[in-house]
Image (cartoon, rainbow, N blue to C red; front, side, top):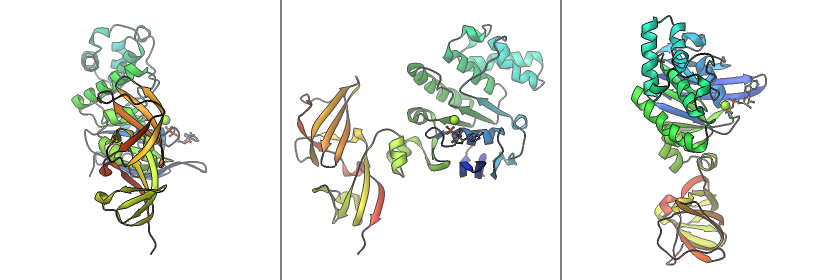
Length: 350
Ligand code: ADP
Ligand code: MG
């Protein structure tokens, strides 16, 4: 059995179903993210694991113990919220040691352990400061140290980095990943930020409307999304649909060879194609189109191209050595059929 097992968990607020029959297994030491748009039930799910909300149905088993009805304080969990609420009148060291005091750990031991936790988050030099003397990122690390110092069975993080500005958030993602790997604490993080989930997680549970749409490794949810929703929530994607017949995709009067995908004939098939999988080519393009927009982002160019399949977004690394492509230009586009992801299919009726 998995270290943490959520079985058929639901949460209703009166008539409203916030979490709808979720099951989730988490292995010991794993870092799982709950990823989805605002209101999809991420926080509600986390709060049920924490014990602040009671499930309407279902059970939660942690390390072989049914904790579904256990008080939050008995679960032994470390929790970090978006608003980290440090005690303003206590130093950093006192803030981190406080949880151990509550657990009746002796003074010397708790100061020692608090120092170690602060070393872990690279705040060893800041232990005598007060929260107001720290930057947002440093305060967030104190909150993390405070959660880790009790050696929790589980670390629960609810949008822990969303108060930080973009650059700091990226640095903290790497650091969070590194810290979690070093301490090995089983972690569940809630986030609406796909790049954050991709960067830190062992597996991502993509949620929509109170349900888990797909759960898999970051690479797989990105590369092999099971639905339109997962595909478009995890980064940009081009979608188009057509009819497959004799190894060719017929769409908008075009015929695109897709024989290497070995698709059955269909009345309607929907595909997703990531912008970075498309390349410009003059020889035997799959389709042609007109460049309607282009934006330079430093490491890459973003193009919008009007094609018979619809408007395509194309990312090209700033490492391509070809003549500059101008707005208004007609270009050929190609991609490997293998990079097309089938996301919905209706079999042809014969
Ligand atoms: P997320 O964290 O994914 O943004 P939440 O889990 O906070 O979403 O909320 C899921 C849904 O449940 C939302 O529509 C929210 O308005 C609703 N909800 C959350 N808490 C309560 C509550 N205490 N009473 C009524 N509705 C709630
Ligand atoms: Mg939330």
